[in-house]
Length: 394
Ligand code: LMR
Image (cartoon, rainbow, N blue to C red; front, side, top):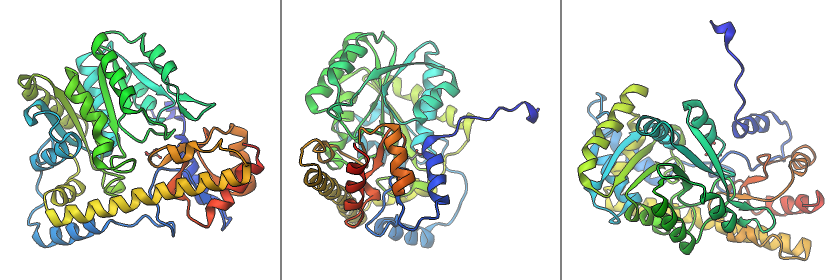
């Protein structure tokens, strides 16, 4: 049977990661995969995670199975972090998942189970693994315009024009904050317009929030998901702790459903547990436990928030420096969007050929659609990147 296997398309983010590793140049710059890096290029374990791990090592007495949907304390802590008091706790079903990707996969399985004919609407562009998972699970997909190549901002008119075709029962996937890959985000008034429209047509929002705390702060970044969850009858949320807790390899995520009527919650909760059981049984616990310890301990939480804020402000500073350097070199404001974008990524608006030249000639690695990871930069590499951007004619 193995001889019948067909080679699957490579994930372009992971492929680029491999190419970067294999490039022998010592002055190469990695702006590819979405991993936070400090000024020395390291992805440190956050202080609060280290402290919680130490405490856990001392206190943990067993490694027996946890709950099928993870520990209730983890579910509670994550519901609170993402939704705060926008909805009642008894409106939310939550299950721990292997990372944010695991939450997305489980969400797509949930949609397939509840409504196999629904179409899932994706922003064009979106994180490439979104369509890949949906296709693999076998659901219908459609795209809505999102990015304006000319301004490198949101094409809101195009988005709303495309969302006019959404039907009752369709699912619309939205990035809660820090849009990946563009860095361009809806403003609060635009979110309200989207919510009103989805409510009018009877579509279900599915929010992927993988960068809470990387944009404008923990609460501001969750404002959209809170607005959606409190306004519409049903919401699906996939959240990740990979980035904001820096625990990429621990695979820590959560899938939540929110229903306006709390009598739906027990069925939702048991369905999420069932889906976990079918796919991997019990979710990974280590990262979830650390997150729970941090969120439930005042001192650890304060330290985590302080470090996350340092990370966020560091990325903002890099954005501003790059925009300023490009303004200086180009003599124009056309790169001002870099300082307006939020999160780890910005789409530069370069052609695939220009991206290729940056890689081949300058050793600068970004995704083919010109998404760059801002956290891959530092004060020394900003002038190098800016010069190369101008040189390749972007
Ligand atoms: C990214 O978009 O680079 C990250 O979310 C990492 C990944 O798994 O693709």
